[in-house]
Figure 1 (cartoon, rainbow, N blue to C red):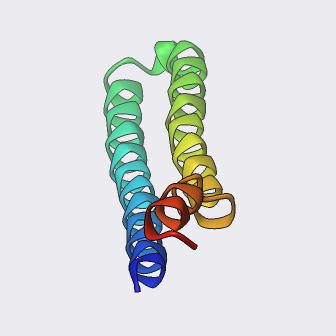
Figure 2: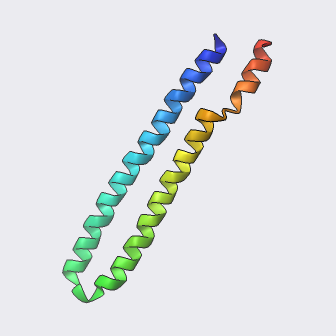
Figure 3: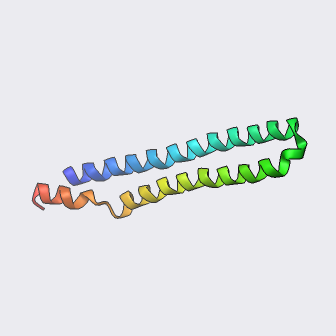
Length: 91
């Protein structure tokens, strides 16, 4: 019983982790793109500098999301809590 509850809760946590990461990245990219367009419209001569900075921030946004996906997949496929619950239950 406890093991199936752990696996169910892990699946919910993984779904929330991946979903929140995707939502945060989407919002971040929307704000980033809008600010880039505003800045390039105000000062067109700064477009190359702004573009480089935009790509750096976009890479950091994706990196944070990929770390979250990596943690979620670790919890899904190599769950470290299964051994603890199995030992506590006696199985």
